[in-house]
Length: 174
Image (cartoon, rainbow, N blue to C red; front, side, top):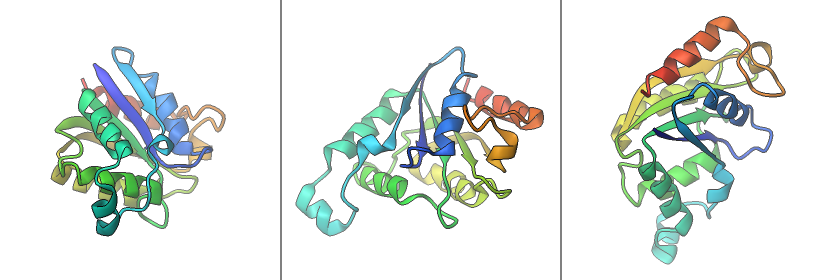
């Protein structure tokens, strides 16, 4: 099984990137490709820019990455209760290629934050909207208080209960 994994954050110090990296070790029967959405940076989406630029190469490449995968894992960072601007822009451009951005792939959606909310707002929005974009969400999990429940150096979940939940969520991809 080929799994595409990424954090919906452009931050180089993203704790969601750390969570993705640490989570991938539990997919022992899979080939996991972790991508950085910074590699798909584009101008801010607008219909005017779309008319001028067409479908940028980066959006096409991102759509192809999803299409080539058997499953997708996303860890969402939360900015002001919603998606990061970097992820939303990438998603907006890609959805203009095909509204079925997730191409019926099984998905696990994760989120973490430094605080007790665990980025639950963005995670709920992502999980609830995914079916409209042909996402087959098998599981979603919020990891609250990252620095209390994870190793701040590696992103590994250290809270035994949350680790069991993470492993259970990832097992849903099989």
